[in-house]
Image (tube, rainbow, N blue to C red; front, side, top):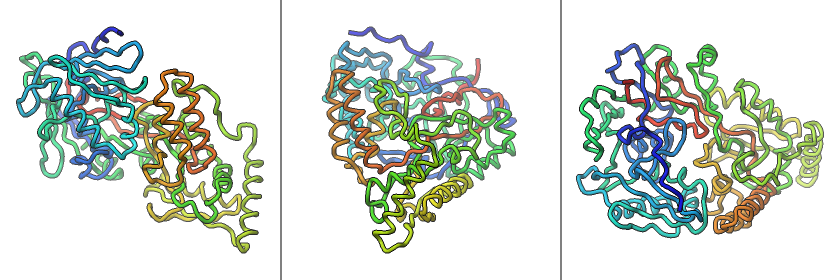
Length: 493
Protein backbone atom coordinates (compact mmCIF):
# COMPACT_ATOMS: atom_id res chain seq x y z
CA UNK A 1 0.00 0.00 0.00
CA UNK A 2 1.04 3.57 -0.58
CA UNK A 3 1.87 5.69 2.44
CA UNK A 4 -0.43 8.34 3.84
CA UNK A 5 0.29 11.58 2.01
CA UNK A 6 1.43 14.48 4.10
CA UNK A 7 -1.23 17.17 4.36
CA UNK A 8 -0.70 19.91 1.84
CA UNK A 9 -1.38 22.59 4.44
CA UNK A 10 0.72 23.28 7.51
CA UNK A 11 -2.34 23.00 9.76
CA UNK A 12 -5.76 21.46 9.06
CA UNK A 13 -7.42 24.47 10.69
CA UNK A 14 -6.47 26.39 7.57
CA UNK A 15 -8.03 23.84 5.23
CA UNK A 16 -8.96 25.50 2.00
CA UNK A 17 -7.62 28.88 3.10
CA UNK A 18 -4.94 31.22 1.82
CA UNK A 19 -4.00 34.80 2.56
CA UNK A 20 -6.13 37.85 1.94
CA UNK A 21 -4.96 41.44 1.81
CA UNK A 22 -7.18 44.51 1.97
CA UNK A 23 -9.34 45.54 -0.98
CA UNK A 24 -11.82 48.18 -2.03
CA UNK A 25 -10.23 50.79 0.19
CA UNK A 26 -11.53 49.16 3.40
CA UNK A 27 -9.36 48.25 6.37
CA UNK A 28 -8.22 44.67 6.77
CA UNK A 29 -11.11 43.74 9.05
CA UNK A 30 -13.74 44.87 6.55
CA UNK A 31 -15.67 42.47 4.35
CA UNK A 32 -14.41 41.76 0.87
CA UNK A 33 -16.96 42.38 -1.87
CA UNK A 34 -16.86 39.67 -4.53
CA UNK A 35 -18.93 39.26 -7.70
CA UNK A 36 -19.37 36.17 -9.83
CA UNK A 37 -20.42 36.83 -13.40
CA UNK A 38 -23.88 35.37 -13.82
CA UNK A 39 -27.29 35.34 -12.21
CA UNK A 40 -27.54 36.08 -8.49
CA UNK A 41 -29.99 33.18 -8.12
CA UNK A 42 -27.19 30.80 -9.17
CA UNK A 43 -25.53 31.34 -5.80
CA UNK A 44 -28.37 29.53 -4.04
CA UNK A 45 -28.72 26.55 -6.41
CA UNK A 46 -29.52 23.13 -4.99
CA UNK A 47 -29.54 20.98 -8.15
CA UNK A 48 -27.14 18.13 -8.87
CA UNK A 49 -25.09 19.99 -11.51
CA UNK A 50 -24.22 23.57 -10.64
CA UNK A 51 -23.48 26.76 -12.52
CA UNK A 52 -20.23 28.60 -11.79
CA UNK A 53 -21.87 30.64 -9.01
CA UNK A 54 -23.40 27.56 -7.45
CA UNK A 55 -20.08 25.73 -7.54
CA UNK A 56 -18.33 28.55 -5.68
CA UNK A 57 -20.91 28.65 -2.90
CA UNK A 58 -21.24 24.88 -2.60
CA UNK A 59 -17.47 24.44 -2.35
CA UNK A 60 -17.28 27.13 0.35
CA UNK A 61 -20.12 25.79 2.50
CA UNK A 62 -20.17 22.03 1.92
CA UNK A 63 -16.95 20.06 2.20
CA UNK A 64 -16.35 16.77 0.51
CA UNK A 65 -13.76 14.21 1.49
CA UNK A 66 -11.19 16.35 -0.33
CA UNK A 67 -11.21 19.83 -1.87
CA UNK A 68 -9.28 22.06 -4.28
CA UNK A 69 -6.99 24.85 -3.17
CA UNK A 70 -6.33 28.08 -5.06
CA UNK A 71 -3.67 26.40 -7.22
CA UNK A 72 -6.16 23.72 -8.25
CA UNK A 73 -4.43 21.04 -6.17
CA UNK A 74 -6.28 18.41 -4.14
CA UNK A 75 -6.11 19.05 -0.37
CA UNK A 76 -7.66 17.41 2.71
CA UNK A 77 -11.22 18.34 3.72
CA UNK A 78 -13.49 16.01 5.72
CA UNK A 79 -10.77 13.43 5.27
CA UNK A 80 -7.49 14.59 6.80
CA UNK A 81 -5.49 11.80 5.16
CA UNK A 82 -5.82 8.88 2.80
CA UNK A 83 -3.98 5.99 1.22
CA UNK A 84 -4.27 4.50 -2.26
CA UNK A 85 -3.51 0.81 -2.73
CA UNK A 86 -0.70 -0.09 -5.08
CA UNK A 87 -3.10 -1.36 -7.73
CA UNK A 88 -4.94 2.00 -7.71
CA UNK A 89 -8.37 0.47 -7.12
CA UNK A 90 -8.90 1.24 -3.42
CA UNK A 91 -8.93 4.67 -1.75
CA UNK A 92 -9.07 4.58 2.05
CA UNK A 93 -9.86 7.86 3.81
CA UNK A 94 -9.37 8.69 7.49
CA UNK A 95 -11.97 11.29 8.50
CA UNK A 96 -10.99 14.15 10.76
CA UNK A 97 -12.35 14.36 14.28
CA UNK A 98 -15.52 16.38 14.62
CA UNK A 99 -19.24 16.51 13.97
CA UNK A 100 -21.65 17.27 11.21
CA UNK A 101 -23.28 20.70 11.14
CA UNK A 102 -26.34 19.28 12.95
CA UNK A 103 -24.14 18.18 15.88
CA UNK A 104 -24.20 14.46 15.10
CA UNK A 105 -20.92 12.58 15.01
CA UNK A 106 -18.94 12.38 11.78
CA UNK A 107 -18.40 8.65 11.31
CA UNK A 108 -17.46 6.29 8.53
CA UNK A 109 -21.08 5.15 8.29
CA UNK A 110 -22.57 8.64 8.05
CA UNK A 111 -19.91 9.77 5.57
CA UNK A 112 -20.49 6.65 3.46
CA UNK A 113 -24.22 7.32 3.34
CA UNK A 114 -23.69 10.98 2.46
CA UNK A 115 -21.28 10.11 -0.35
CA UNK A 116 -23.65 7.51 -1.78
CA UNK A 117 -26.43 10.12 -1.82
CA UNK A 118 -24.16 12.62 -3.59
CA UNK A 119 -23.18 10.08 -6.24
CA UNK A 120 -26.80 9.01 -6.79
CA UNK A 121 -27.85 12.62 -7.32
CA UNK A 122 -25.44 12.87 -10.23
CA UNK A 123 -26.73 9.84 -12.11
CA UNK A 124 -27.72 10.74 -15.66
CA UNK A 125 -25.33 13.72 -15.79
CA UNK A 126 -21.92 13.86 -17.42
CA UNK A 127 -20.25 13.67 -13.99
CA UNK A 128 -22.46 10.70 -13.23
CA UNK A 129 -20.79 8.82 -16.07
CA UNK A 130 -17.42 9.71 -14.55
CA UNK A 131 -18.49 8.13 -11.26
CA UNK A 132 -19.54 4.88 -12.96
CA UNK A 133 -15.98 3.82 -12.07
CA UNK A 134 -17.02 3.28 -8.43
CA UNK A 135 -17.62 -0.37 -7.53
CA UNK A 136 -18.41 0.07 -3.83
CA UNK A 137 -18.32 2.56 -0.95
CA UNK A 138 -17.73 1.00 2.46
CA UNK A 139 -17.55 2.19 6.04
CA UNK A 140 -14.70 0.68 7.97
CA UNK A 141 -13.74 0.91 11.63
CA UNK A 142 -14.40 4.23 13.34
CA UNK A 143 -13.82 7.22 11.05
CA UNK A 144 -12.61 5.32 8.01
CA UNK A 145 -14.28 5.05 4.62
CA UNK A 146 -13.14 3.04 1.60
CA UNK A 147 -14.01 3.63 -2.04
CA UNK A 148 -13.35 0.71 -4.33
CA UNK A 149 -13.01 1.28 -8.09
CA UNK A 150 -13.63 -1.16 -10.92
CA UNK A 151 -10.21 -0.28 -12.33
CA UNK A 152 -7.58 2.38 -11.64
CA UNK A 153 -8.58 6.00 -12.28
CA UNK A 154 -5.54 8.27 -11.85
CA UNK A 155 -7.67 11.43 -11.61
CA UNK A 156 -10.15 10.08 -9.07
CA UNK A 157 -9.18 12.46 -6.26
CA UNK A 158 -9.60 15.45 -8.59
CA UNK A 159 -13.08 14.22 -9.46
CA UNK A 160 -13.92 13.64 -5.80
CA UNK A 161 -12.94 17.26 -5.03
CA UNK A 162 -15.66 18.73 -7.25
CA UNK A 163 -18.18 21.01 -5.46
CA UNK A 164 -21.07 18.68 -6.35
CA UNK A 165 -19.41 16.05 -4.17
CA UNK A 166 -19.80 18.13 -1.03
CA UNK A 167 -21.32 15.94 1.69
CA UNK A 168 -24.42 16.91 3.64
CA UNK A 169 -26.31 15.48 6.58
CA UNK A 170 -29.88 16.54 7.20
CA UNK A 171 -29.50 19.09 4.43
CA UNK A 172 -26.49 20.88 5.91
CA UNK A 173 -22.82 20.97 4.96
CA UNK A 174 -19.83 21.38 7.27
CA UNK A 175 -18.27 24.56 5.93
CA UNK A 176 -15.57 25.81 6.08
CA UNK A 177 -17.90 28.82 5.64
CA UNK A 178 -21.51 29.43 6.54
CA UNK A 179 -23.95 31.19 4.25
CA UNK A 180 -26.54 33.81 5.09
CA UNK A 181 -28.82 35.34 2.52
CA UNK A 182 -28.88 39.07 3.13
CA UNK A 183 -30.58 41.59 0.84
CA UNK A 184 -30.63 39.00 -1.92
CA UNK A 185 -26.85 38.48 -1.77
CA UNK A 186 -24.73 35.81 -0.12
CA UNK A 187 -22.86 36.67 3.06
CA UNK A 188 -20.16 34.11 3.77
CA UNK A 189 -18.28 33.91 7.06
CA UNK A 190 -15.80 31.41 8.45
CA UNK A 191 -16.98 28.77 10.90
CA UNK A 192 -14.86 28.51 14.03
CA UNK A 193 -12.28 25.71 14.06
CA UNK A 194 -13.86 24.31 17.22
CA UNK A 195 -17.28 24.03 15.56
CA UNK A 196 -15.66 22.14 12.70
CA UNK A 197 -14.09 19.65 15.07
CA UNK A 198 -10.63 21.12 14.71
CA UNK A 199 -8.22 22.29 17.43
CA UNK A 200 -9.21 25.52 19.16
CA UNK A 201 -7.41 28.69 18.07
CA UNK A 202 -8.01 31.64 20.40
CA UNK A 203 -7.48 34.45 17.94
CA UNK A 204 -8.89 32.87 14.78
CA UNK A 205 -11.44 35.70 14.29
CA UNK A 206 -8.59 38.21 14.00
CA UNK A 207 -7.34 36.53 10.84
CA UNK A 208 -10.50 36.11 8.79
CA UNK A 209 -13.03 38.37 7.16
CA UNK A 210 -16.49 38.05 5.68
CA UNK A 211 -17.13 37.81 1.98
CA UNK A 212 -20.09 39.60 0.45
CA UNK A 213 -20.91 37.72 -2.71
CA UNK A 214 -23.22 38.68 -5.57
CA UNK A 215 -24.00 37.29 -8.97
CA UNK A 216 -23.89 40.15 -11.46
CA UNK A 217 -23.91 40.71 -15.23
CA UNK A 218 -20.36 41.14 -16.51
CA UNK A 219 -20.84 44.78 -17.53
CA UNK A 220 -22.20 45.70 -14.09
CA UNK A 221 -19.42 43.83 -12.30
CA UNK A 222 -16.69 45.47 -14.36
CA UNK A 223 -18.20 48.91 -13.74
CA UNK A 224 -18.36 48.37 -9.98
CA UNK A 225 -14.80 47.05 -9.94
CA UNK A 226 -13.61 50.14 -11.82
CA UNK A 227 -15.32 52.31 -9.18
CA UNK A 228 -13.57 50.47 -6.34
CA UNK A 229 -16.80 48.89 -5.06
CA UNK A 230 -15.68 45.31 -5.69
CA UNK A 231 -12.43 43.66 -4.72
CA UNK A 232 -12.73 40.54 -6.90
CA UNK A 233 -14.74 39.52 -9.97
CA UNK A 234 -14.77 35.84 -10.93
CA UNK A 235 -16.18 33.76 -13.76
CA UNK A 236 -15.81 36.00 -16.80
CA UNK A 237 -16.03 34.25 -20.16
CA UNK A 238 -15.06 34.93 -23.75
CA UNK A 239 -18.33 36.64 -24.65
CA UNK A 240 -17.60 39.40 -22.13
CA UNK A 241 -13.81 39.58 -22.41
CA UNK A 242 -13.86 42.80 -24.53
CA UNK A 243 -15.52 44.59 -21.58
CA UNK A 244 -12.19 44.54 -19.74
CA UNK A 245 -10.09 47.64 -20.19
CA UNK A 246 -6.79 46.70 -21.79
CA UNK A 247 -5.09 48.77 -19.08
CA UNK A 248 -6.34 46.28 -16.49
CA UNK A 249 -4.72 43.48 -18.46
CA UNK A 250 -1.42 45.30 -18.74
CA UNK A 251 -1.36 46.15 -15.01
CA UNK A 252 -2.09 42.56 -13.99
CA UNK A 253 -5.43 43.43 -12.39
CA UNK A 254 -7.20 41.28 -14.96
CA UNK A 255 -6.23 37.62 -14.79
CA UNK A 256 -6.93 35.16 -17.60
CA UNK A 257 -6.93 31.39 -17.14
CA UNK A 258 -6.38 29.26 -20.22
CA UNK A 259 -8.20 26.22 -18.91
CA UNK A 260 -8.52 22.55 -19.76
CA UNK A 261 -11.82 21.85 -21.47
CA UNK A 262 -13.99 22.36 -24.54
CA UNK A 263 -14.42 25.47 -26.66
CA UNK A 264 -16.03 24.81 -30.01
CA UNK A 265 -19.28 24.28 -31.89
CA UNK A 266 -21.57 21.34 -31.18
CA UNK A 267 -23.99 20.10 -33.83
CA UNK A 268 -27.45 20.24 -32.28
CA UNK A 269 -29.54 19.43 -35.38
CA UNK A 270 -28.09 16.82 -37.69
CA UNK A 271 -30.30 17.54 -40.67
CA UNK A 272 -30.00 19.47 -43.92
CA UNK A 273 -26.37 20.14 -44.73
CA UNK A 274 -25.35 18.82 -41.30
CA UNK A 275 -26.95 15.40 -41.82
CA UNK A 276 -23.78 13.87 -43.29
CA UNK A 277 -20.58 13.60 -41.18
CA UNK A 278 -18.52 14.49 -44.26
CA UNK A 279 -20.43 17.74 -44.69
CA UNK A 280 -20.11 18.51 -40.99
CA UNK A 281 -16.39 18.01 -41.48
CA UNK A 282 -16.49 20.67 -44.22
CA UNK A 283 -17.62 23.22 -41.63
CA UNK A 284 -14.66 22.32 -39.41
CA UNK A 285 -12.23 22.43 -42.34
CA UNK A 286 -13.34 25.95 -43.27
CA UNK A 287 -12.56 27.53 -39.90
CA UNK A 288 -9.59 29.87 -39.64
CA UNK A 289 -8.99 29.16 -35.97
CA UNK A 290 -6.09 31.57 -35.62
CA UNK A 291 -8.29 34.40 -36.93
CA UNK A 292 -11.08 33.41 -34.54
CA UNK A 293 -8.80 33.80 -31.53
CA UNK A 294 -6.71 36.75 -32.69
CA UNK A 295 -9.13 39.62 -31.78
CA UNK A 296 -8.97 38.64 -28.10
CA UNK A 297 -5.19 39.00 -27.83
CA UNK A 298 -4.76 36.28 -25.19
CA UNK A 299 -1.23 34.92 -24.97
CA UNK A 300 -1.04 31.14 -24.86
CA UNK A 301 -4.57 30.63 -26.22
CA UNK A 302 -3.86 28.11 -28.97
CA UNK A 303 -6.29 26.60 -31.47
CA UNK A 304 -6.96 22.88 -31.68
CA UNK A 305 -8.81 20.50 -33.98
CA UNK A 306 -9.01 17.69 -31.42
CA UNK A 307 -12.04 16.62 -29.41
CA UNK A 308 -9.78 15.74 -26.47
CA UNK A 309 -7.36 18.41 -25.29
CA UNK A 310 -3.86 17.68 -26.57
CA UNK A 311 -1.06 16.85 -24.16
CA UNK A 312 -3.11 15.30 -21.34
CA UNK A 313 -1.38 12.80 -19.04
CA UNK A 314 -1.53 9.33 -20.57
CA UNK A 315 -2.13 10.57 -24.10
CA UNK A 316 -0.50 7.89 -26.30
CA UNK A 317 0.12 10.42 -29.08
CA UNK A 318 -1.70 8.37 -31.71
CA UNK A 319 -4.15 11.17 -32.50
CA UNK A 320 -2.76 14.48 -33.62
CA UNK A 321 -4.15 17.72 -34.94
CA UNK A 322 -6.28 17.29 -38.05
CA UNK A 323 -5.09 18.57 -41.42
CA UNK A 324 -1.70 19.50 -39.98
CA UNK A 325 -0.08 19.26 -43.43
CA UNK A 326 -2.95 20.94 -45.30
CA UNK A 327 -3.11 24.73 -45.44
CA UNK A 328 -6.32 26.73 -45.06
CA UNK A 329 -6.76 27.38 -48.79
CA UNK A 330 -6.63 23.67 -49.63
CA UNK A 331 -8.99 22.80 -46.78
CA UNK A 332 -11.47 25.39 -47.94
CA UNK A 333 -11.23 24.17 -51.53
CA UNK A 334 -12.16 20.65 -50.38
CA UNK A 335 -14.96 22.00 -48.18
CA UNK A 336 -16.31 24.14 -51.05
CA UNK A 337 -16.46 21.08 -53.29
CA UNK A 338 -18.63 19.30 -50.70
CA UNK A 339 -20.92 22.32 -50.49
CA UNK A 340 -21.22 22.34 -54.28
CA UNK A 341 -22.16 18.64 -54.32
CA UNK A 342 -24.79 19.22 -51.65
CA UNK A 343 -26.26 22.15 -53.61
CA UNK A 344 -26.45 20.07 -56.79
CA UNK A 345 -28.35 17.36 -54.93
CA UNK A 346 -30.70 19.80 -53.17
CA UNK A 347 -32.14 22.07 -55.84
CA UNK A 348 -29.18 24.39 -56.19
CA UNK A 349 -29.83 26.49 -53.08
CA UNK A 350 -26.85 27.34 -50.90
CA UNK A 351 -26.96 25.74 -47.44
CA UNK A 352 -27.90 28.05 -44.57
CA UNK A 353 -26.94 27.34 -40.96
CA UNK A 354 -27.74 28.95 -37.63
CA UNK A 355 -25.48 29.19 -34.59
CA UNK A 356 -26.29 29.92 -30.94
CA UNK A 357 -23.80 32.09 -29.09
CA UNK A 358 -24.19 33.78 -25.70
CA UNK A 359 -24.87 37.51 -25.73
CA UNK A 360 -21.86 39.79 -25.48
CA UNK A 361 -19.27 41.69 -27.50
CA UNK A 362 -16.93 38.70 -27.54
CA UNK A 363 -19.62 36.59 -29.18
CA UNK A 364 -20.12 39.34 -31.75
CA UNK A 365 -16.44 39.06 -32.65
CA UNK A 366 -16.68 35.28 -32.88
CA UNK A 367 -19.80 35.39 -35.03
CA UNK A 368 -18.32 37.89 -37.48
CA UNK A 369 -15.35 35.60 -38.15
CA UNK A 370 -17.47 32.44 -38.22
CA UNK A 371 -19.77 34.04 -40.80
CA UNK A 372 -16.74 34.97 -42.93
CA UNK A 373 -15.39 31.44 -42.68
CA UNK A 374 -18.71 29.93 -43.76
CA UNK A 375 -19.15 32.45 -46.57
CA UNK A 376 -15.73 31.40 -47.89
CA UNK A 377 -17.12 27.93 -48.71
CA UNK A 378 -20.60 29.02 -49.76
CA UNK A 379 -22.61 28.63 -46.55
CA UNK A 380 -24.78 31.35 -45.07
CA UNK A 381 -24.64 31.69 -41.29
CA UNK A 382 -27.04 33.55 -38.99
CA UNK A 383 -27.51 33.63 -35.22
CA UNK A 384 -30.33 31.92 -33.37
CA UNK A 385 -31.32 31.22 -29.79
CA UNK A 386 -30.05 28.11 -28.01
CA UNK A 387 -32.48 25.27 -28.60
CA UNK A 388 -33.37 26.52 -32.08
CA UNK A 389 -29.92 26.56 -33.70
CA UNK A 390 -28.08 24.06 -35.87
CA UNK A 391 -24.80 24.76 -34.06
CA UNK A 392 -24.18 25.90 -30.50
CA UNK A 393 -21.05 27.17 -28.79
CA UNK A 394 -19.74 24.77 -26.15
CA UNK A 395 -17.57 26.57 -23.59
CA UNK A 396 -16.95 24.16 -20.73
CA UNK A 397 -14.06 23.73 -18.31
CA UNK A 398 -13.01 20.15 -17.59
CA UNK A 399 -13.39 18.71 -14.11
CA UNK A 400 -10.23 16.59 -14.41
CA UNK A 401 -7.42 16.14 -16.94
CA UNK A 402 -8.32 12.86 -18.61
CA UNK A 403 -9.75 11.92 -22.00
CA UNK A 404 -12.73 10.31 -20.24
CA UNK A 405 -14.09 13.69 -19.18
CA UNK A 406 -14.08 14.90 -22.79
CA UNK A 407 -15.64 11.71 -24.13
CA UNK A 408 -18.37 11.72 -21.49
CA UNK A 409 -19.50 15.19 -22.60
CA UNK A 410 -20.78 13.54 -25.80
CA UNK A 411 -22.26 10.41 -24.23
CA UNK A 412 -25.41 9.23 -26.00
CA UNK A 413 -27.23 9.11 -22.67
CA UNK A 414 -27.06 12.90 -22.37
CA UNK A 415 -29.09 13.51 -25.54
CA UNK A 416 -27.00 16.51 -26.56
CA UNK A 417 -26.92 15.82 -30.31
CA UNK A 418 -25.34 13.26 -32.65
CA UNK A 419 -23.39 10.69 -30.67
CA UNK A 420 -21.43 7.49 -31.09
CA UNK A 421 -22.37 4.23 -29.38
CA UNK A 422 -18.96 2.89 -30.44
CA UNK A 423 -17.21 5.77 -28.66
CA UNK A 424 -19.29 5.20 -25.52
CA UNK A 425 -18.44 1.49 -25.55
CA UNK A 426 -14.72 2.10 -26.07
CA UNK A 427 -14.71 4.62 -23.22
CA UNK A 428 -16.57 2.22 -20.92
CA UNK A 429 -14.19 -0.61 -21.85
CA UNK A 430 -11.25 1.69 -21.09
CA UNK A 431 -12.65 2.41 -17.64
CA UNK A 432 -12.54 -1.31 -16.85
CA UNK A 433 -8.93 -1.75 -17.99
CA UNK A 434 -6.20 -2.14 -15.39
CA UNK A 435 -3.42 -1.90 -17.98
CA UNK A 436 -2.63 1.80 -18.64
CA UNK A 437 -1.50 1.12 -22.22
CA UNK A 438 -4.73 -0.72 -23.09
CA UNK A 439 -6.75 1.99 -21.36
CA UNK A 440 -5.03 4.70 -23.38
CA UNK A 441 -5.52 2.76 -26.61
CA UNK A 442 -9.27 2.39 -26.02
CA UNK A 443 -9.65 6.07 -25.12
CA UNK A 444 -7.83 7.00 -28.31
CA UNK A 445 -10.19 4.74 -30.27
CA UNK A 446 -13.18 6.48 -28.67
CA UNK A 447 -11.73 9.86 -29.63
CA UNK A 448 -11.20 8.63 -33.19
CA UNK A 449 -14.85 7.53 -33.36
CA UNK A 450 -16.05 10.94 -32.17
CA UNK A 451 -13.67 12.72 -34.53
CA UNK A 452 -15.08 10.79 -37.50
CA UNK A 453 -18.61 11.66 -36.39
CA UNK A 454 -17.84 15.40 -36.65
CA UNK A 455 -20.59 16.22 -34.18
CA UNK A 456 -18.28 18.61 -32.37
CA UNK A 457 -16.14 21.20 -34.16
CA UNK A 458 -13.20 22.10 -31.89
CA UNK A 459 -11.76 25.61 -31.87
CA UNK A 460 -9.54 25.95 -28.79
CA UNK A 461 -9.50 25.44 -25.04
CA UNK A 462 -11.79 27.57 -22.86
CA UNK A 463 -10.59 30.76 -21.20
CA UNK A 464 -11.92 32.53 -18.11
CA UNK A 465 -11.14 36.02 -16.86
CA UNK A 466 -11.15 37.46 -13.36
CA UNK A 467 -10.51 40.90 -11.88
CA UNK A 468 -8.45 41.01 -8.69
CA UNK A 469 -7.60 44.27 -6.97
CA UNK A 470 -3.91 44.87 -6.36
CA UNK A 471 -2.78 43.59 -2.96
CA UNK A 472 -5.43 40.87 -2.74
CA UNK A 473 -3.99 37.46 -1.88
CA UNK A 474 -5.64 34.07 -1.97
CA UNK A 475 -6.07 34.03 -5.75
CA UNK A 476 -3.98 32.00 -8.18
CA UNK A 477 -4.38 31.00 -11.79
CA UNK A 478 -4.93 27.29 -12.40
CA UNK A 479 -5.96 24.92 -15.22
CA UNK A 480 -9.51 24.56 -13.85
CA UNK A 481 -10.23 28.31 -13.73
CA UNK A 482 -11.77 27.68 -10.31
CA UNK A 483 -10.81 30.10 -7.54
CA UNK A 484 -12.20 28.90 -4.20
CA UNK A 485 -13.65 31.51 -1.86
CA UNK A 486 -12.21 30.43 1.53
CA UNK A 487 -8.65 31.44 0.56
CA UNK A 488 -9.97 34.97 -0.01
CA UNK A 489 -11.34 35.09 3.54
CA UNK A 490 -8.16 34.78 5.59
CA UNK A 491 -6.10 37.78 6.49
CA UNK A 492 -2.31 37.64 6.65
CA UNK A 493 -0.88 36.99 10.09
